[in-house]
Length: 384
Image 1 (cartoon, helix red, strand yellow):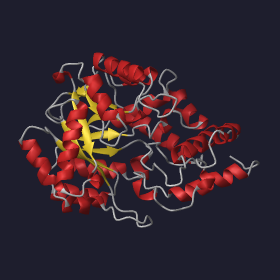
Image 2 (cartoon, one colour):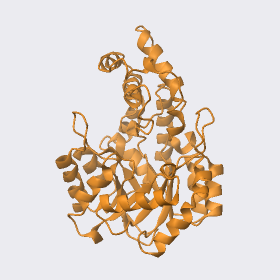
Image 3 (cartoon, one colour):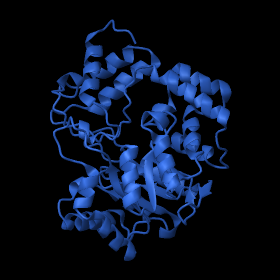
Image 4 (cartoon, one colour):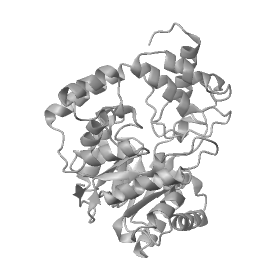
């Protein structure tokens, strides 16, 4: 496994993101312990040493504690995130941090992030300007105290905002690293290239999340995928996205949320004896991105931050069903998938309350997209 030392540590170029661990098929959909543990063990045995979780990842921290504590602490680096929106007073931070240490069965965190800096979406009826709240609760000072005490080795943040907000963060605080969403669609769609440039100019190493945009770039549309396969029939479509993200020199690890052994082995193969994408290959990827964007799929990564919905709607599932139909150009999978949802879970149940909007890291106008899904469900003769 290729590694990079941009943070003072030799970190594997492939990092294991623990947000999308395999889950049991029946309620309450707990993490599939044996399957997930096998993935962790295989990853460690094949050179992956960076594991990324978060307080809000539904049992992920506790699983990380159970799975990783079976291995020597020096054999892996543990990263987790604190959600500022859950902190109303200083005591809340200390409580959450101590809960995280206990859950992860750790004495310290190698990498610790402020979770999800982003601007407020004015359409949502909330007041959650993450930067202002971060300043108001004095979170940075407490992070520095914990770093001085050895409880945190490196302090960073994950980011889903604009370049304007990013420049403010970089100008006003000193960071050891940052985490951004970068792939060959978001390079321009969310100004990820500019975010990369801002952080690189400031000398801040970067970890990458969503290199495959929640799995979207592991499949693409048939036309877009064919473009890549024609270039290299031996390489998976997913491997192109992983290679692209890893090709930026200021990236110290590329996180992938792997829930199947096939995904893990493919990613390991891609980033072992790593070969960056060439300029010609970049142009090919940008061409594939243009083809894919014409499918009309909703740019949802399936992160589930929008949940729970006040009326019980399963937002990511609606988008996944819709996107599959749009990308394969075939309607029947949509009709079959939509039929499996209850009335409360379907897009048609949306009341446009806006509760989901401010929680979406992609800044999607979710109610508008749900209306699109609803109209598609009604128009059985609708074109793809």
